Every structure is written in C-alpha cells, then in structure tokens.
Amino acid sequence: MRKAILMAMTGVACSAGLAMAQPVAETESGAVRGRLESGVESFKGIPFAAPPVGALRWRAPVPPEPWEGERDATAFGHDCMQLPFPSDAAPLGTEPAEDCLVMNVWRPEGAQPGDDLPVILWIYGGGFVNGGSSAKVYDGSAFAERDVVFVSFNYRVGRFGFFAHPALSAAREGPLGNYGLMDQRAALEWVARNVGRFGGDAENITVMGESAGGISVLHLLRDPEVRTRIARAVVMSGAGRSEGAMAPRDMVQDREGRPSAETLGMAFAEDKGVEGTGPDALAALRALPAEEVVSGLNMADMQGSSFSPYFRENRTHFNGNEDMFAAGSAPDDIPVMIGATSADLGFMGGESKDEIFAAFGARAEEARQAYDPDGALGVGELRAAIGGDLLMIEPARYVARGFAGAGAPTYYYRFSYVAESAQGAGARGAPHASEIPFFFRTIDARYAEAVTAQDRAVAERVNDYVVNFARTGVPEAEDAPEWPVIGDEDRMLDFAADGGVTVGPDPWQDRLDLVRELVGN
Image 1 (spheres, helix red, strand yellow):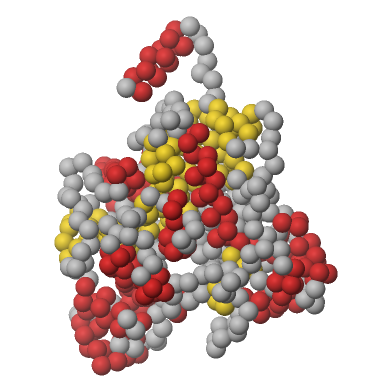
Image 2: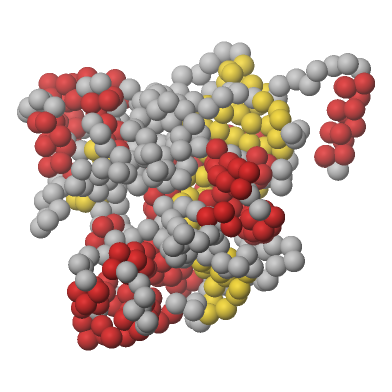
C-alpha cells in the first residue's frame, strides 16, 4: 500500500513538473539530507561519535557535536585509518582517515517514523586491521528494496582500534584497549536510539558480520549490557574458539610466546622514539601522524602479532565463547544464523603430508582418509583444508551447538557456491569472504559483466533467506527448502556448489570431529 501511494504521489509531482526533493531524516544530533535513487533512500557519513583524534585518540567514543540545519549525507565519510590491503575482497571506496566514526543508512523510498521496518546492522571484517563500510559489495540497497532498513558504520582498526601502553593505563581516562569494540557498542546504541526516525524498528535489530565482523557479533552476544538491543544475529565466518591464532592477548600479562598488549605497545613506542610511561609519553604518542601509527600494518603484514581484541578483568573484558557456554550465560532468546564458506580461511603447520597428519596422533590415518584418501591434494592444499576447518568451519559448528544447547533457535549453514566465472583454475571451494556479495545481492559489484543467470539466482535465494530471518527470526526463501534448526543431528543448510540448496546432517561431521580433538573439546 505504501508503495502504491508513493507511485501516485510521484506521478502527481512529475505531471506538475516538480523535481523530487532529497530525503531528509532527523537524528538526535541534527537533520541529515540524503539521496534518492531507484526507490531507495540513502544517508551516508552520519557521525555517531566525535572524531577520535588528538586527545580522543585511544579513548572510548564520545557523542558528536550537534549541528544546525540539514547536514549533507549524500556521500560516504572516510573509512578508518589503515593501509588498504590490495587483495581485499571488499576494497575501500574512500580515503582512510582518523575522523571516521560515521553511520550509513539505506531505507525504502518514503519510509517514515512509525513504519517499524526490520533493521540489519552490518559489521565488516578485515582482521581488525583493515575494512570499512564504503565498499561497493556492502551497499544496502538490495535490503532496502525488500523493506528492510540497512545500517553500516565504521569502527577503528589496527593500532587505532586495539592498542595498550602503560601511559594509557596510568592516565585513567576510561576503558582501555579495545577501542574498536567500544565503537561497535556505541554504534549499536546509536541505532537503537535513532533507527526509528528512519522508519526502522528498534526492537527488531539483526546484527550481521563477517570474519572479524562475525567475531564482533559474537562479542556483542556475550555482552549482557548490550545484547538486549539485539533481536537476531548472523555470524559469517566468525571463528568461535579462543585457542591458537584466535586467542585474545592479555592487556598487561606476558604469556609464553604471546607478549601482552602493553608489551607490544611499548615496543611500538620505542620504535617511534617515544620513551617513558607518563603523560609526556602519552602526549607524544597522540601527536604521532596517523601514517606513523599505521606504520605499514595491514592484512598482508601483521608484523608478527595478532590484533584480536584484548582481555583483562575489570579493565577491558573479553571472555571467549567457551566461558559463556560453560557458565550457561548464552542468550536463549536470540535466533542465530551461523556458518562458514567451504574453503574458508585457516592456518596449519607441517612441511609434508606425514608431518601434517601426525598432528592427529593416533587418529592420523583417519584424518588421511577424511582429507586426502586418494593422495591427490598438494601439501599446501591440505594445509589450507585442515586450517580452514580449524579456524572457521569447526568453530562455527561449535558455536552453533552452544547456542542451540542454550535454547536459542540456531540455523547452521555452509556456503559452497563459487561464482561461475571463478570456477575451475584449481578452486577447491568457496573462499573466505566470497559469500558476501551473495548475502547482500551485490554480485554485480564483485563480478560485473561476468555475472551469470545462475549466480543471480543464488544471490536472490541467499538474500531471501537473510531478509526473512531479519523479519521473523526464521530463514525462509521462496521455492527453496525449509531450513531446520541445527538440533542434535547437526542439521544444516548448504548453499551448494551446483547452485542448489541441500538440507540434512553435516556431511563433514567425521572430519570436523577429528579437528575438534586437536583443540581439546
């Protein structure tokens, strides 16, 4: 009905020779003027926090200054400061800068306060060192076309988002270390307070993220103070275990083979000629040019350290999912959709097949039969297959089981489809992040003229499942199989390599059980 009224109004305006006005929405800080294009209204670059520069570098986000009149919101703000990663599956669309804490909103044309449309809040990935909301594959138009209010935002990455130093601890300026996670929490709170002004339903917010964004979704679900804002959650390749490469680093305590966050911060400061742990050292660190803080860090060069979030009780709390499940504190009222791609990201040591399989101990021969029964895999391919199971695929199952055990409706998936133009050439499955343009229905931004009818059909179906999950908490798609909850049989939905959808027990059950033994539970 709303669309019919809009079409009638548009016809009257056009017949009178009137130009369509740019859409305007109110926020708690002031009015924003956006853009109308093909039935979708977008508002970009809306500040949800003050620029984290100068004295606000390495501080929790604070509210932005209000503005008078209508703020231009027709273009993306800066993505957060970083060295872009050349092979990024979601390349940035803006020049990175420290002044980056902005929000973007897409809504259907004519949406108004009181429409109570479902809301999706997107959190990008990038290993906590790269990523931004301006990437073309993250465009929210396809969701808005389906009467969803889609929201994305930027959070600080790299040393701007995850940094510790004794001078910061001594300054006692507030929460420490995980400034990027603080940004995410502030963004969720902003959406809860403001999305109703855009026609969204603040009581129906689905938080969705991929890779580091998926890890971030899980962090929000573990936080009892903010998860009351979340109605549903979508976790795409969000790992889920806290061992090995994903182990959070302690803020101040060095551990064997894993220096503390403050130790890393001290080493960085000394490399930049900043000595001491007092106010002068902190002032000197905050005076460093942004490029010096980046200092070459990105996904291609992690410089020997992980930038996963830190933990320290009573300072910046970051407990793992294991703690949440063991304590019985997982939410039981938030439906969760969780999975990974079939050739996901991961790491596994070993210079030969025998050395790789030896890691499985007494079950080495079972592992050989599960992964390489005919001996056709190369050593690198074998490491990648087991590594992907270790880092992403088995942990997705683990977390799905955990939420289901807590009573939450949990929908487990695997994304195995490879765009037709990317098939062949040794592809062993769907790579990390390759599902994003299908979930968003932005495959043209990723594959351009190479998009096929089958690619488009898969994107329509995947997006349909996601949209209906955001609406009702149950993922459904037209003319597609029913997606069951995981249950005791590890039932799952596979977006299959042939472009179809299969439903049933996890066919990788045995090999994932082997991997589970490597991590101890």
